[in-house]
Length: 188
Image 1 (cartoon, helix red, strand yellow):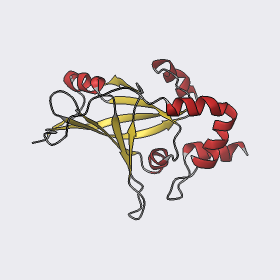
Image 2 (cartoon, helix red, strand yellow):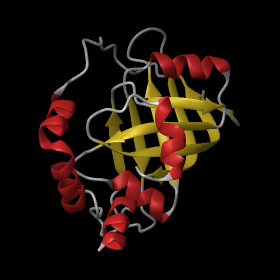
Image 3 (cartoon, helix red, strand yellow):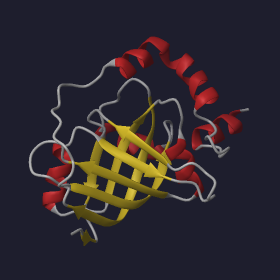
């Protein structure tokens, strides 16, 4: 049976800090739009308070979460115990995108390890926390981080990454302009 909480408890925070992967879910307002679920790895998530978390978002082949947050702000983060006692923990919230070169980025970035390919920070104000049993989740053992994305971003370099962001991360699958895309439009 799931339990609801208005904010993170200390035991929730401890659980989150042990996880090596989490999942982000978002969706556009349109019923025909794509629902997006993205896995996130690395040590990229920070807890700022029982009702505030943020994660360093790295360059990917799309930028759906960013587009959905710009359109409606809805976001869910899910953490799953693949090792140890079973549990699933979901954070329901309203999110926003923080881009490099903004004053808010400059205030937050020192909390993160700046990884190659960092494109934005996703900041979430939590309005509800839900735990559930996770009894059917199988065991998986952690064996290490993939270095492929960081190596790819480092080899691309800053200029080519900006071009990639403009070409691949400016508009969602459903045609929603992302905050990165808005930045490129305003620079033209």
